[in-house]
Length: 457
Image (tube, rainbow, N blue to C red; front, side, top):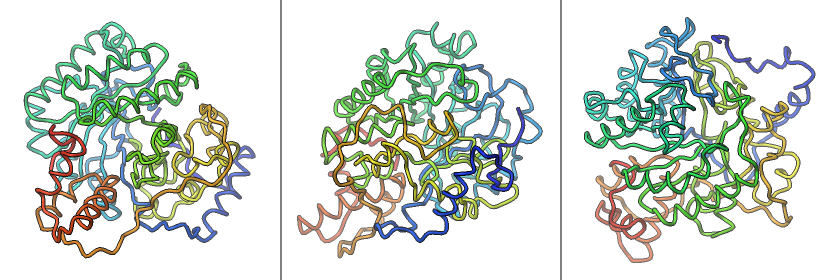
């Protein structure tokens, strides 16, 4: 509690990680493969800012092992340090999504000032919260600041089950009240659900419930048993596959609500198996697919360590000592994820480019983040690798008017290239010389129906 994560220092690592040294060194010194990737393919699309360990709950699955102490720890990043961190992220990519979370971020007194600073720089900002502290006053202020939405965790539709898991009576009731406050004040919200043995069979009802409430996104998280959740039992690989297949079908059913699996790259393999033209795979240019750890995603801990994801306490360094820019662009740790030498069946698999398996599970299990993901049931069949449609710019004579360009730039970065290509392709095929916001809206409605767009523009 309160200690820094181990900084990746080869001279001090023990024999267990000795092999990793030579692997990572070879990745970082080797020239990048001639596979079409550009620097844009390694921009951060998503950065999770775990800005506090303070929390008003005692959840069994907390990877941060968050506590109820009021101070948050003597090593917690200060307000000014948070501002400086956000400024540095902006140097790498202002278009990424910042997730402000904890612990419970809303118990940190300066959290709205931090959100306001991020929005002022043009970031899309969402919160990951238990929802208990959201009331009309706070929801209204968040809207005025320009926060895009709130991700609110619901572990069961049964209040007693949710409250028992969250460790505090009334947690479910307060979370639902927070959702209603968001709705009354025009603040978009997402529902976050962690699939576990106790609740995964509730998922069909949870999806229906979230859609009926008006959630714009349903994120289903698949646990990596670390932190306070180290002693918990995960769902089995068979249940994992069953849930992922159901989520893909659910996305077809509810096209006006994004239904996504988190920490479950197999989702992309199953989507491709069902439909090779599925718009939610990297094969079609959706850069939110597969494991994003270290390639397009990173996490900052409350004391400033930068890690590839929340489930891997594998620090690339601390932002107090080295800028986010240098850590993101020059870290040997992150390079090992960008040009990986996957082992076992993950390395053999024809889906390794669009899935790649979860890197945190083998790391947590035995310290090797390049090993195969044993939670995947798929047996590779050989043949050519299914390729990623990389984020490369295409020459086009199609023009965008200023309003359409503004709207395009408000689309989350990991979706933007795919949307741009699709709209320009339609315009070219139909001899439309200039793209307008009306054309974008027409195409969106054809794809998703007449419901409001998932993201505010």
